[in-house]
Length: 126
Length: 147
Image (cartoon, rainbow over all chains, first blue to last red; front, side, top):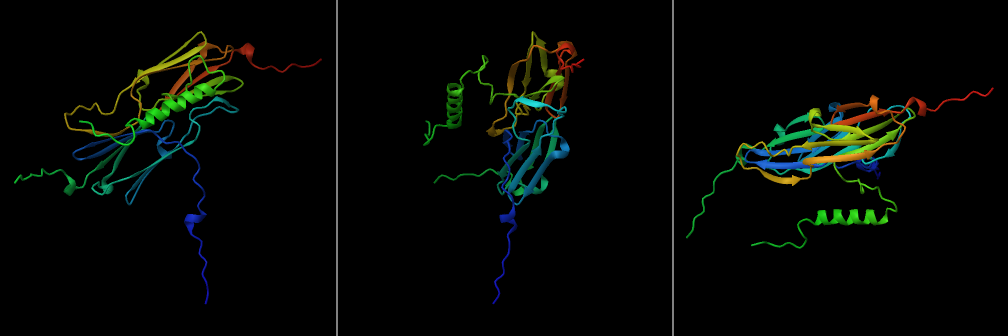
């Protein structure tokens, strides 16, 4: 009998390096959810947006033009990476997510699926 | 009628305040303008031999709405950031998370003395205002030749 040893890719993955949580606003209206997130200093090509199953991941890498030989004397934005993960609920249509990125602000629109649109429920009182 | 919960609703605000109090208590000589960390906008400052570089993290603002002032060695950055909800279509909108700063802000940064304020450069890109202030010629390090 042979025992197979398999390495799981999950175990080999390195510890996620520390990153900043971008502040967000989330609003909901009848047709869907809108999310705004601050990614200052992240150029468009360094922004990553991923919807996988019920998980929305937003990630960005900070890119500043730093002159040669600069020495930081005061640092408030201390990590070069922003990352945040959200769990979506099932009435949201993850196939039709749209996004817009302008001056460091990411706007994501996640519409609700057609059958999740509101219906008036009449309540019967007996 | 208020339905009470186990935790106060603004528990995070309380924790925030506690953290600030602690930071203030433990910092031996805080800046005269208070502990700046955690405010909006975030600021990074760096030095080079030729200049001082200030990075202000103010995403989502029209460059025209930013006021940058340099007076007597003090750099002031002020402006207003609009809340995203004011689309005002009359539709019912529920805010679930509201973390992003909105409203008027102002940050004041004291700079070293050896700068020449006439040659300031300010650029706004990807939501970051980058102010570069060169040092005065006389203040630049000079190599002294030995005879």
